[in-house]
Image 1: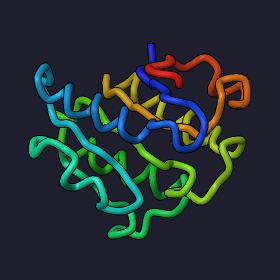
Image 2: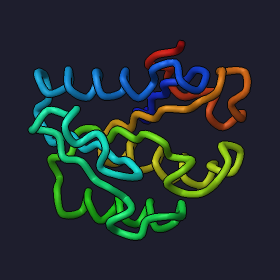
Image 3: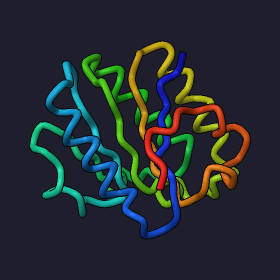
Length: 142
């Protein structure tokens, strides 16, 4: 079973704060590496030092395809990655939520083969999310 989790709710309701909170709480029980993926490094001081922050703008990541390749590269060189937290995925890959089926199809395969968990925030209500996202686990909703 894939380990993809969603945090969703209206814009400005605190999803990023909740994601940071969950990431920081994960440090206490994690047996592997935790990675927080964002479009910039604005969360650097909010995250526990044990969490690796990846600023996608530093690596020119702006499509689903190069994000998937980047994640595969990270997993290939570090088998200890346990969880990846994603904030603002729509802004990272410059696509609407309806256009993210390729990304989630690829990440579902990766989570099944590697056991890595993926946690995402979305500024939508669950009923507004496309069908391909409906079956993933709701970690938190506002």
